[in-house]
Every structure is written in structure tokens, then in C-alpha cells.
Length: 208
Ligand SMILES: Cc1cc2nc3c(=O)[nH]c(=O)nc-3n(C[C@H](O)[C@H](O)[C@H](O)COP(=O)(O)O)c2cc1C
Image 1 (cartoon, rainbow, N blue to C red):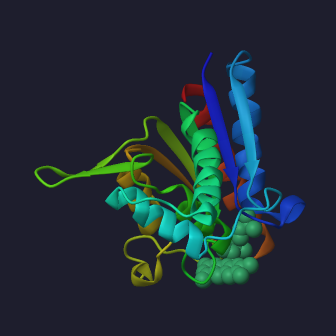
Image 2 (image 1 turned 180 degrees about the vertical axis):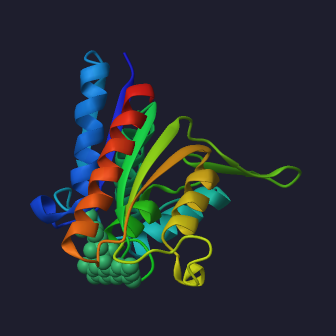
């Protein structure tokens, strides 16, 4: 029995295109893999802890083998709990809207919390950084515009390049993106883009 974690980062719920596509993926995945466990992590419902001074100092204490204060220890146990849930998965599904050319701040906050030394990554002076997370990922990207090669807008895309660089950094290199764009277009073009993305997501889920 495999474990899929679905990490949702749009607060728009019923109006969200990335969630609509991700839900189609999850439905198709469950139909194909009825015995697998699907853990849905809605970042907006989760009440993520602040990535504050204690959490950052706890991170540096972990990196330098220093003693943590009581506040840092409490922050580090929240980090460990969130990372353990993430790391328990064999497969990852993310829905990632573009916000101001990057990812929603709640997703960045989650990334800051779980991207920790000794959990998500390690460093060896001889070999450099290694990602410690194992698994593969499907990512539903949505945006108002189109940022593909040749669009002339590639330089503004800090959504997909950033997110995939982060996945690679933590060790997830088997990544299949599904694009749901452009979402700022004539209604019939939006409907077509969503329908194409739903089909691509369902096909991917059937072999994921
Ligand atoms: C705060 C905010 C910022 C946005 N910034 C961009 C942007 O920089 N570029 C873009 O193409 N679309 C941008 N959009 C549009 C969204 O990416 C688009 O509506 C997408 O469908 C949102 O995903 P969702 O439908 O899953 O919520 C922005 C939307 C919001 C709410």
C-alpha cells in the first residue's frame, strides 16, 4: 500500500482551477489504487506555525550541533512533526497557483518550515548538498498568463523553476508537471485549458 500526499495551496477552494485539476487527479488515482492512502494537506486549514526567530535559531543550532533553548526546542518539535507527515509519503501531488510570478506565500512558508538539515537535506564538504526525501511528484501549475518558452514572458516565471528547483534540492527529481493556463482569457479558452489539464491529470494519475 503506497501513500500519496496531496498538498493544496490555493485558498479559493470551489473557484480554484488548480484544485479542480488536482481533485480530478486524486479521483482517478483512488479509482486505480483503491488500497493506497491519500493524505490531503490543505495549507490554509493547517494553521502553519510561524517561521520565526526560534525556528530559524533552532535550524542553525541543528546545523552547528549547538544546544537549543526551550523556545527553539518547542519550534523544532513542530518542524519535526510537519516534516514527518511530508516524509511519510511515497508520492507527492501539489497544486500550485502563480501569485505575483511566484508561489503563494503559504506554500513558501511550508517550504521554509520543512526544508531542514538532517530531515530534507544534508551537506558533506566533499560531495556538497544531498536531498534526503525519496518519492516522485506530480505538480498542477495554474496561472493567469502563459510563460512557456517562446512566450516572451519566461523571465517572469518564478513559479515553476523555483518550485522544481526546490523539489530537486530535497531529493524529488522524478517530477511531472501539468499546466493549467492561461486562466485570464476568454471563458471558452479557460474552459478548454482546464479541460485539457483535467485530462492530462487523469492520464497521469492512472500511471502514477
Ligand atoms: C494574489 C494573486 C496573484 C496573482 N499573480 C499572478 C501572476 O503574477 N501571474 C499570473 O499569470 N497570474 C497571477 N494570478 C492569477 C492566478 O495564478 C490564476 O488565477 C490561477 O488560476 C490561480 O490558481 P487557483 O485558480 O487554483 O486559485 C494571481 C492571482 C492571485 C490571487
